Every structure is written in structure tokens, then in C-alpha cells.
Image (cartoon, rainbow, N blue to C red; front, side, top):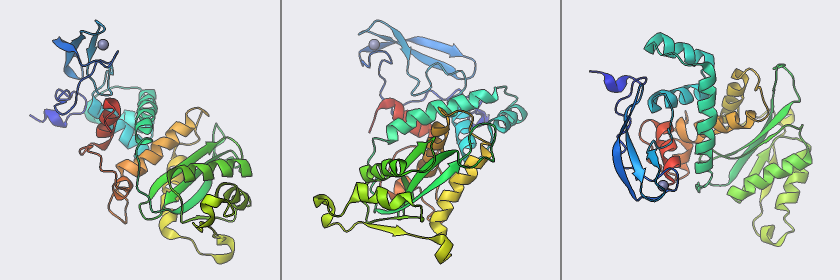
Length: 314
Ligand SMILES: [Zn+2]
């Protein structure tokens, strides 16, 4: 029996021993067990009757009414965000598990679970060191994937943890206004020791607006803005460039993000993948661990994160 290796028919997925069940409608814990719902791909799912709101529910921990198994869904999300296109993912499932899904389902799952997990991790409090490297990159959107000067993705990394601590997605070209919003987002997570940027003309003014050393609360902190003018110094910060180029590579693989509403969600997914799912190649650790966030996700990190997000445990 290799049943537990099969992500398509996952009969063991409802072993939620350590999870506290709540009514999905009213969050009450006053309920009774009422038999099972039989599903094609997910085995038997425990049904409950809520004595508070008199409705039935199942405790799916993030997979309520999903037709595919949670392993198949999390595998698809994980593989999509780590570099496999939705069409290739669909083809793999057909070839290896004889399981038919639409590639749109993969995209739907990615968007649904990225939003859910993003909302959860946004409330966490990573311990950052404050040596911040910030950068911005062009995001081609629509059919013309080679087009430059399209949307801009702003991204800041905490050097010691490699934790991406602030992002900003803007459909407009770089400006002082957007750079200021980005700096504000950096500040909301950590008071930096310094922020290093490239020689973009909008950075110094934005930095002054947000971290003006003449303001009382910043006067003793000596927060620095370091400009690395690569054109002049020819010095790239290789280790931090690795983080940014990983993100840029993944964006290129999207072959142009189709819609403005979904582009930021997919980028948020790449950031989640970086911070919480894939160990950093040089540190061998997850940025979230280095930032002191020890989440009990188990080996299937996406599944663990989705469950944590669904229970509201923190
Ligand atoms: Zn209820």
C-alpha cells in the first residue's frame, strides 16, 4: 500500500488531531458529530452539526468544499511558485497520476491560498536586524512581455535574515510618491540601521520624507541611506542580488502577468515562497526561521501554513 504517497486520492487527509474544530459559519465550538460526507478524491470527511446556529459544516482547515485533495492542491501551489507553469503542472498530474484538472484551477488555488496565507503571516512579527537592501524592478504585464516601463515591483530584504520585509506593487513608473510609500512600508516592520538602494533619483527624497534625521524620533538613530551606484562602483552585492534575481527570474517565467488584480497576488506568492517555503541556498535555513518565526508547519509547509491560517492560531 502506497496510498499516502498518492496526492490525488488522499484518504488520510482528515487526520486533524491537533486542530481545534470550530463552526465555519459562526465559530462556535458547541457542535456534535453527524456522520460523514463521502468525497471522490478526499475520502470521508467528518460532518458536524452546530448547536449554536443550527447548520451543518465540515472542518476542512482551509480546504472547505475543495474537490481535490489538500496534498494535490498544496503540491500544485508549491510547484507553481517554485517555477512550474500552470500548464506544465496540469500535464504532470495527468501523466503521473492520470488525474485531470484545468490549468486555471492551479492559478485559482495559487491565488486563493496566497491571499489566505498572506493575511495570516502579515500579522506575525519577524525579528529583523535592520540592515535593509531595497530595489525595484520592472514587471511586464499583458501581452507585450518585453515591454519595459510597465508596472514596478518594489522589494526590500533584511540582510541578516534574508527576510523580505516590505514590498509594494505599483502600476506606475518610479516616482518619489511611490518610493515614499515603499519606505513607509519598510519602516512599519523595522527601524532600519541603514537602507541601501541603487542610484535611483527618487530614493534620497523619499528617504528624507520618511526618515528625516531632523525629526526628533530619528535624531539619535543615525539611520543611513547608502547609495550603491553600480554604474560607477561596478560592485554588486552578490548575495543580496541572488534574492532579487530569483524573484525576477520567476516573474519572467510568468510570461507577462495578465491582469492588474492578480499580478500583486502572484508576487505576494513568490515572496511567501521565499520567506516561508524554500530554504536559502547559502544559509541553508528559511528566512522566517532566521527571523525567529518558528511555525509548526510540518514537512508540507504550504499545507501547514494554510492550516495555521485557517485556525487563526498565532
Ligand atoms: Zn455555527
